[in-house]
Amino acid sequence: MASLFVIKGRDQGKRFELDGPVSGLGRDAKNSIQLHDSEVSRRHAQVLRTADGFSLVDLNSSNGTYVNSQAISQHVLQSGDRVQLGRTLLIFTGNEERSSIDLAEEVAIIDRSKPPEGSRIVTSIGQEEGSRIYTDADFANNPWLARTRSNLQIMYQTALAVSHTLDIDQLLHRIMEFIFEWVETDRGCIMLVDRESDQLLPKVFRHRRRSADGEKLRISETILDYVLQKREGVLTSDAQEDERWDTGASILKMGVREAICVPMQGRYDIVGIIYIDTFTPPGQMIQNRQMNKFTEEHLKLMIAIAHQAALAVEDTSFYSAMVEAERLAAVGQTIATLSHHVKNILQGIRGGSYLIEEGLKHDKNELIRKGWNIVDKNQEKISNLVMDMLTFSKERQPERVAASLSEVVADVVELMASRAADVGVQIAWQADEDLPMLTFDPDGLHRAILNVVTNAIDACEKSDPGRIEIRTTYDQETSMASVAIRDNGSGIPEEDMGKIFSVFESRKGNRGTGLGLPVSRKILQEHGGDIRVETQPQQGSTFYLEFPAVAAPPPTTSMDP
Image 1 (cartoon, rainbow, N blue to C red):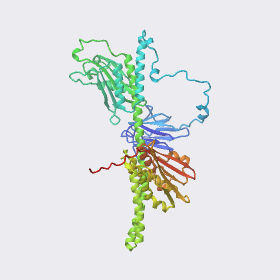
Image 2 (spheres, helix red, strand yellow):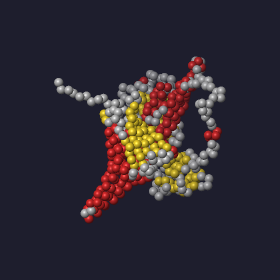
Image 3 (cartoon, helix red, strand yellow):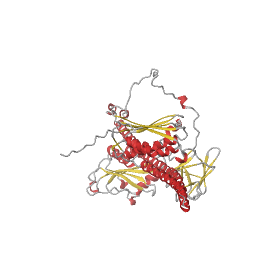
Image 4 (cartoon, rainbow, N blue to C red):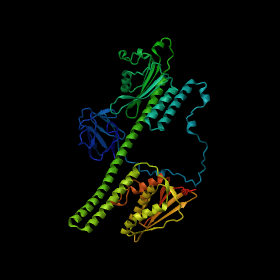
């Protein structure tokens, strides 16, 4: 579906789907796309669905509507267009029809067991060696080629740094290290544009030889404004004599011989600037007249590096915004799902409380018992729900102690016996007398086994008769313990197998929370194990809860002398 995705502004990360014939954009809540931007009009623009696609129409807004940096009154949107309203920047994605070509018919991967049709690997090359385009001998008599290789190496290292990190601060520090390694600069600074204030904020500063008096890096707004407005990198030499600048504004303080300032131009906007300079204290300016260290070649290199850095900053920002949007969507789904279950439980408690109240009024003990049974069952439901939520929501280390796996399983069977009997399900369990004492978290395993047995009972409700078999095993050679829980229910459809451990995925309708199996698997994985499932349609399923557990040493006894 066609959509507008906010990549800059207070609503960054939100995606608005264009599912109606008309979609209004503006500050007013009546708009289908409400933007929380003070520079956007109440009714700023609208998107019209046409036979050919979508058109954006400006509604005589105060600050205008822009597409790809051009003011428009009406514009036919193309996928990838950048829509600017106030300080909000959106990307339009069209619902382009996918190619009807079946790629599986066009591309075939030959199976390993079949002959390779005569082809063979002639040679291979690694990433590091692949970056060496020329041999060392090529540079001996060609300074230009040597400089070109040096610049290519810088860009290659920058591209690698960009592709290997999603941490903005770490990336910017690494890029500054590259600049100091390859450019003869004394000081450097990277500043990013703050989304809220549109001001440049320093993120990285480096000084090759800090002066004794702690001289600060001073950059005039004259240069910054020029770079940001013109979107051009600048090279200044003896900056205080450069006629392009307003000398009254003093570009840089005395002592700066050369400076390079370049914009970090991304795909959609400038995200910051990179500034480097050479610095000589004022008293040494006359005695120390060196050749210029910066050339136009350095300027071009810095522009390329800044562009790479800007793309990385944009990608990371968009990724973070999408993750945040997905997190908020997941939170909303969680709240909605849990609220539904809690509401059902509260309705049950309210119904039981009503029966208790009526029984007390008319002194009917049978009515009181019936009401209390309802309240008690729903109290158990909400207790299990809360425990599952706590178990799934936080990482925890199992509290391994010496315990009997047979006793844990026996306790689960005893706890679920009455519930199984109510729905006509028989639980067959026989303790393994040879099972040694093991070290594991008995409380955690108890909850994991309880959830799986509960699911097995629900799966057997329509079987006649329903039957659940539980057995435990322990392999001393591999130190692997296993609890197998088999039911003769309807089995799990093949299309559902990939979703049974997903949160809030349940085939029980209103009765299931979709937390049981994910919680059980999480507990097993915290023990270093996992849950394995075997299922056959109309014959049932077997869940294997497997985890490593060493046999506990026998208890020591002290003897009185």
